[in-house]
Image (cartoon, rainbow, N blue to C red; front, side, top):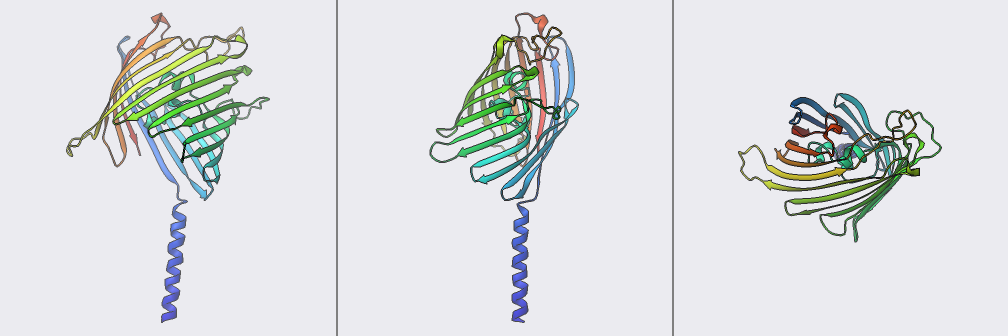
Length: 336
């Protein structure tokens, strides 16, 4: 009987250990849904949108190998494959990533929808510096002493859908995050893209600081077009956020955030050529002031109700795009 009991105990121990080992390889599922209502006060027009309906799957297939796949089932009504990459971590702080991903560039453009502070992203994140591509990156981070994160990579430069194209010259992007003390971040990044085989160089510097319930952030981006193919572009984003935590148990919201933002962009070209083979303005110079309130429901999942008002300033109002005018925005965001 003792032998039988010992064998059963050993079998149970092995089975328990095996189950524990397999748990770390179970995939995790995440999702983000953003429903939005907008009313443009300058045109007396309104609309509803499903801005995002993202689902992602990530996990490990080996202690050194991980993966992620993310799809947006409704990016303003369009289905898009966003991330699809594999990652190898041969050393604890060193990683190699291959596949489709957001390139390492800027602060605000790297925020996922559930991490955004405002309903609509800054000009830097949306118009000037928002790029996903297919390529490979190397990353190294250090937590001790003088913490930093360094990441750089090479990319095809043809975006998410034209992956069969061949290229004589690849694009590159690199990003360095310095964190000399707690709750402070200084980010330096650079990128080269080649729409229509014309080199465009971008340089970005940004910083943020979290103090008590405050978040202060400033970011600037400079864009240079080779061979004077288009005039250089500046873009700026600056905002402040204050979180007011509510202790009342029966109150539906656990936190209310008060936000204010100023952002600016100069006359900008995304690299598209006209009939004469010249780059032209795809986004005209403008300034924007945004005020907002965010009502957060708290755990177990993230659910935010965002109320924003955006005021735009153009030298010539006639140049304003249909969706880039004074507006009231009401957005519900759920992350699970």
